[in-house]
Image (tube, rainbow, N blue to C red; front, top):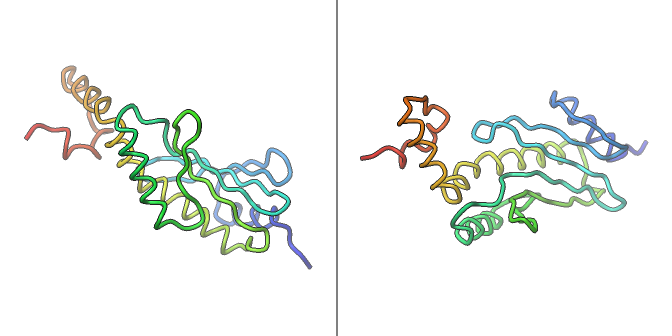
Length: 162
């Protein structure tokens, strides 16, 4: 009995207790819970020859575009199944295509894990490199008003005066 790629994806998403939708047969969207990037939405689309994997990571950087994009390209050399990509707006995504014959429960699980790991582990670095001025302004605004800076704790090392 041959199991379809859509059936395999549906099974893995269900077994991992991930909330997902199937907007049409073979087109899935699921939310992966992270630590730094609290949620990464991944889409898996079953095509004729391959399954496309796509996830939004961050909007286009406000500053240091070249440094951010170079860092992403260097990361691509070490990644499995997906790679960083930039769309026409400069927004940062993870994208990949996996041949149909490779779609097994183990492979789908590895792909979802890769998307989560790469989105989550790169998120703060992307923010530090591409949005430092905005983060600093937010921090200073919160300090001046006595507001909590807890949501900026990940950046404490370079935000607080020494």
